[in-house]
Image 1: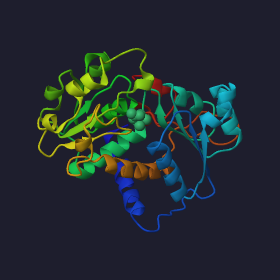
Image 2: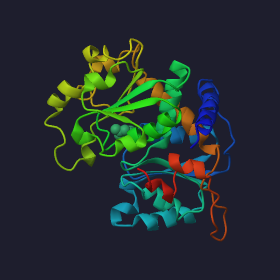
Image 3: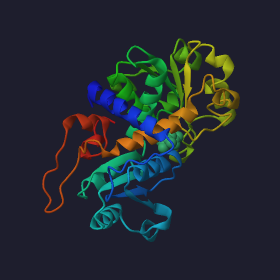
Length: 322
Ligand code: ASP
């Protein structure tokens, strides 16, 4: 996605921030349309953001939880996609534990598909809400130093943020133990630091990531306690960043592991709760451009906007460059 397109979406999201702060929050521009949220992985923030935003936009919102679906009876992902398609949904929001699964489903259905997180690949709406949060505090993103710290290897949040923030001309650093930083991260435009004090030194934004134990096959860190000692964000360590550095975390947090509780709860430094609010505002963007929209009727080639592919709101191309 081009910087001006990201900026456009952030500007539009401001409208939804204002709407969400009103007493009456309804805007019926998706009235009569059906939105299916198909979540094959657990979620609190993302699922609720899409559900609340869809309802505020007037859509009929239905949630499909994989744990209670026929997926548990052995149904394949493609059969599930064909089933959702037959129900004539107008938009499908998908979270899946496998990288590329959203692209696979997008290829099988006739309606727009939004990526609510696929494996360790991408989490585009998280990157938008993070950029919105940063921009609201710092005025602009260009020229800021953003340190993304922790389990970068398993993090789709890190990948989407690197793409979005570098596109907006921020200097992005990834910080963590060598075992948790992908080999080719520099190719995405981020600088690598394995020393936390050095990595957050002079940063405008310190974005902490959770240790994604559910994606780990074996031990990547000696122990949570040692990890906290070397990479946990404490007040002492935060002094290395700029005095007005923002502390961010996409949630869910592991308090006392990647972040100390007093730092996470410091309303003068931490914008973690505000990130959640911005997530609902970004959910309001789902009526915006439909990059992979295919009209009802016989399958035909979808209207694709090439610039969306790098941001990966879905589509086969999102498997590239990850
Ligand atoms: N909630 C984020 C995600 O779904 C981050 C995390 O789970 O640690 O990727």
